[in-house]
Image (cartoon, rainbow, N blue to C red; front, top):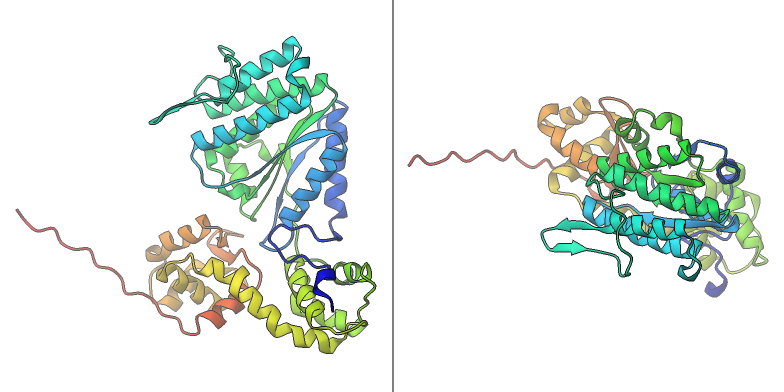
Length: 407
C-alpha cells in the first residue's frame, strides 16, 4: 500500500495517531492540574515502565493536556549532566516560562522579583567563570543564591509559582528519563515541589523513567511516596493492542482480518513500540485491504530485522565485552529477573567479582533491580535478541593486576 499514507510511527517517543490504553493516567493528570489550579493539593506522579511501553508518548500527551488547560509546560529529557549544567537548563526553561506567564512590559512588582530570583538561580561559578542568563535583570540578594541546589530551586519555583497563581495559570515540569538525574538533582526537585505543595501553588513536576526510579525517589526524600504516585505502565491488553493497530489503519480506509490482529498481538505481546514497528512493516507489504494473517507473517522477518538493527543493537553496542557477557548469561537463564549468583555461576565467576559490572549496566539503563539480589532487562524481549546477536557466551579473562616494580 501507499507508503505516504502509512499511519504508523515507529520512532522513539513519536506520538501515534491514536493513543489507547492510557486513559487512567491521562484522567489522573487532568485531575492533578485542575485541583492545583483550585488551590487544592494532589499527589503528582512519576510514571515507570520498561523501554517501549509508551512513557515518552504519555508524557507528551500530558504536555498537550497541560497546554490545553493554559499551563506553562517545561519539558526536559534528563541526562547525566553535572549540577551546573542542570541549573543552567532549568534557569533557561524557567526564564522562558516567566516571560510567557507575564510579558516584560506587563511586569508587576511580584513579576520583577521573580525575574530577579531566576537571575540569582542562574548564577553559577565553575572553572570557566560565571554563566548568566542573557538579560539585564539584577539578582535578588538572599534568594536562590545559597549555593545549595535544593534551596535555590525551591526559591525559584516558589517565585514562579506566585506569578502563575497571580495570572491564574500553572507550571508543569515534565521530565523524561528521570533515572538519569543525579541523586542531588532529583532530591532538589522533590524538595522544591514539596514546598510549592505546602504553599498551595499551581506548580507540579511529573516524570517518566525506568522501574528503579520509584526506589531512587524514595531514597532521595523519605516523603516522596506521599508526594507522588508511581503508576507502572505495561504492555497493552489484547483489546487495546488490537485498537492500536486497527484504528490508525481504519482512518486510512483499511481494515484487518481478525486472525491478522490475533497474530500481530501475539508477535508484539502488546508492547506499544513493537506494535508501531510491526504495523509499519505490515502496511508496506500488504497490497490491499483487508490486511491478512499472511501479510503479518510476511512482515515478521522485516519487523525483527528492524528491531535488531536499531532498537536492540544500539543498546548492545554501548556495552563492553564483560557487560555483553553478563547480559548473555542472563539471557541464557531466561527472560525473567535473574539472581546475581546464578548469573555469576553461568559465567564461572563469583558474584562479588561481577558486582561492578552489574552496577554499570544498571547505571546505563540496561538493567534494573525488581527486588534485592535480582536484575532484569529494561527492554522487552532483549533476552531473545542477545541470544540471536551473541550465539556463544564468551567471558573475558580476569585481568590480573601488575605488580609494581621495586625502586
